[in-house]
Image 1 (cartoon, rainbow, N blue to C red):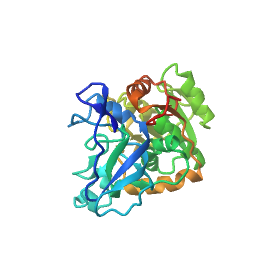
Image 2 (image 1 turned 90 degrees about the horizontal axis):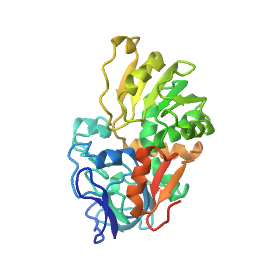
Image 3 (image 1 turned 180 degrees about the horizontal axis):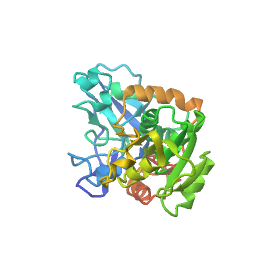
Length: 331
């Protein structure tokens, strides 16, 4: 099978032929139909996360079908599944016992500690494979597995905030915007300076306002979610939310947050992070997505063009989500 392998820190992905992996006890082998490209993949590539092993196959927004079963599994061959970021938890630590498996002390993550979906086939723990409906198609379903799930968890941290700001209008934000609009919220989108395409994209999705990240919105926000990995946006977002408002940092990695005066936080404003996801998040969100319905904007690349897709994501030229589709041409 073909994989795209990261063989060194801050390297490029290399196409390699490998034997088909064999599923062990409790594991499924999945034929990959699509794998979305996430900003976390860039953090893995850039060695910004601790303990990245090499060689590694990245990718954690995987859609495919069960191809083979290991001992002790029950999913039928041919079942359509999604494989998310969270790939294993111990089930024994205080976080797992406390219904917060996203904070498991011994968690392992797909495309980070476990080979992921930049491949024609992958192997995953059956317990962390999510059943998928027939719709949407593979490429449009793939971004739901991380951009959607992390976005959903981040949105839940904002309570019922009527006016919501989204900093960094990429794959996660374009899904969250649709979900928030479905809930009757006003959405304010913050984009890179001069990015007229992202501004228009946000307005097409029903945002009330879209503008540059450093500009104050026309009305004070009740909450904001920061998807861009830019620590300097934290004090900016705190300035934009009213007293009692919440700022949620939705990424796994962010540049250093600059010093800022306590007055920006005062007034019972809340600053918090979101870490990973739970299987419950996945089940809830995947039930909710068709009701909205959420439509993901995608641009596809063949698996062998993974480096090009990552470069497009890094440069901010992808509207919505980038998706790798093994055996397909770019589209």
